[in-house]
Length: 249
Image (spheres, rainbow, N blue to C red):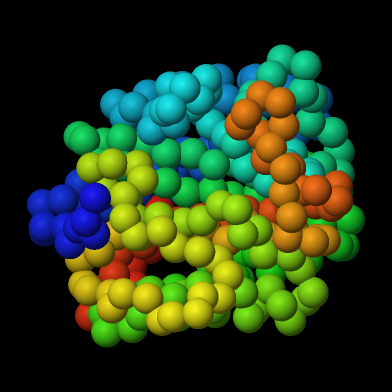
């Protein structure tokens, strides 16, 4: 699959998808309180997405059984919602969601605090979010793809955090995952040159401890190898000749 530069029409549809996804995240975050199950969070998320006449991008994608990936504490990504998994005060919950609007995807993730959380958890969430903003400083025409990767890695390094290497960001459009892959860690080369009209899902996944992760027996849920907390922050971004446009904010 080649990297696609989107037409004006495609960009308009992706902007609409992004706005709906931003609203979905806003409404969903408000639902998360101690005592709610991840099953209920997913159910609510799917209801919100469908209320906008959109389709959840993740439902049945490669066999994933839910609409929202819900990952708690040491779960990095792709946590499967469950009636048994009850969210507790002090947890951090990563919500990764996607919507399809008229054939075009938007993909975004947020890590949400449940009640009062520890200072170290709060700092991890803040740094992960800032890693994204450090990265997109280079998401403009004429820059190289791996300048984004290096900026994310360099910022996380300042805090001694682990940058997940087994999972990466990606292009997005008519497909949820398109070329190019966007690592969150430094690369040897500089990567391809970016062009206005490219749409990218940039998504730092940052661990409080080491970068190593393992897959659980469900073949979906990815957790930190050392049991440390993990945070995730993602948006769908449009490359322009000037400042990048964040479509899912």
